[in-house]
Length: 459
Ligand code: ARG
Image (cartoon, rainbow, N blue to C red; front, side):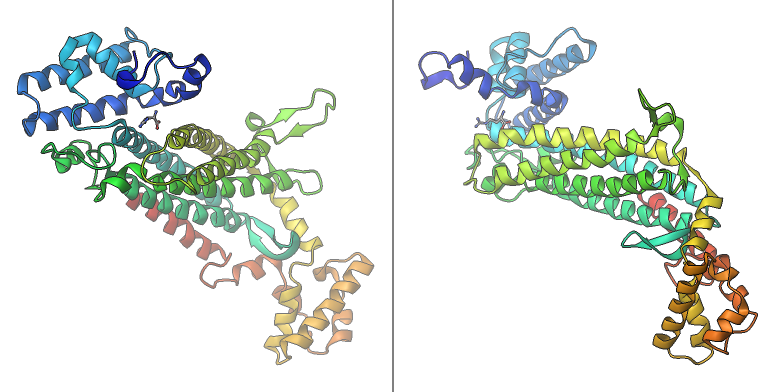
């Protein structure tokens, strides 16, 4: 019999019943549901809405169900309508009639969002931990590569030399912001909707502060209609997780490019590569490609949640039942993705020679040729043109800037002296970029320490 079957006659259509049921998705809220109910019933005891012995029987019954689910002696009945119905049914089975008093001064509308908030709070903490490990793997790899010179790109055209550490630390900074966004989203998850009841509160003398504090919520939501209608916290979490996924996708894209033949800048460990069933020479960056595509799933889930919410009137509508599948999918996907990316980064090898050679072949010190002249009084625009002509000469004659003869330099400007070769030394070019945020070795070491300290503060 349905919890709500009071005034309805007959059974639900077979397909409607299946269509309506959410238990296959929300069964993962079972422990949150039981914990939420225990807090609720303790409150009913404290406020004397229920007699002490009745409340105690219910709490003990709920604890016993918790235990039975844990040790496998009780299985979730997947023909139930949802997890709340299942737990209430199991409770009545366990302790009899008194179990029917549990739902006093509550509705599934405040119950479901309470359960979800408890669940997402734990998940956010877990994802923060995984994010920290990922950021840490970037910092550790950066430490090994503060002197690994590589081309920096704009428009995917070789631009100026940086270091591999500098490049990795750009992702670490994104990770740090992701961490902050996640913590911020968690603050709003951590407000209690419990006690809003169906939408209009209750005539019973409930104590919402008590249940909030029992469940570790930081505060109580102040409007009962808002409390049951709000799914901003899901939209926010979906957005935060999508941004994380996009950052991981961009890094994956770079790993795919860097590990491809013309580049060969990095070697992705065999643990994270696959072979081809036909081409023996192939080593494919499948994990990086999958991470790249998982971002589509996250963005899809986020989109679904936004579209689902956009026209809903207050307060609860059944549309909102669909929030869970999407957010659980995003959570499970991002957790796996972070784990795989962390392993992939930790086991990555930089091909230092290839990266350095690409800097030379790509004329990445052309800006430094111009700067040399600027230091001797030439205006930057003219210096830029002179440097461009030298690059063209290099391309035509298959020479890098440090291989071009001094006489050629002098033919462009008599301000060039033999010291031009030291000035355009790629390593020097990088290490002189000491401006805050730049690629110079000591500056990147400062960035690594900055990130590591921030992570430390957060744990
Ligand atoms: N399974 C429902 C959900 O996930 C629980 C809330 C049902 N409330 C209701 N008024 N039908 O949204």
